[in-house]
Length: 124
Image (tube, rainbow, N blue to C red; front, side):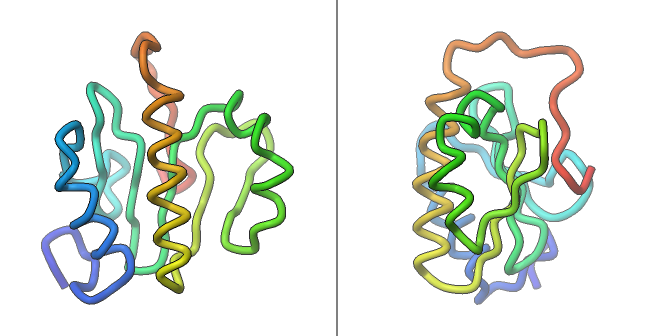
């Protein structure tokens, strides 16, 4: 296990390592206190809670636009009226899905004003 509590050889660990290399991303502890988080600008938009669980802050409007596609994926967990989604990481394809959605999340948050009471992930 590494400092964030994520097993070194897990899918989440691979995603964390990949996103740490992106210039706009900063890794650290998840704000909810569970696992690792990735911050872009002033927002922490990804939490890797364990080696096989991630939560991503997509925004409600992006989730609504993508709902039909998200609902077809057994790896994605949606909660009504929430702007975070859960993603189960079991395969490399799941990691690729998470990285693709993370890229969309960056775009969804770009230019938005940071609210004092930021959205909380499902775990926090």
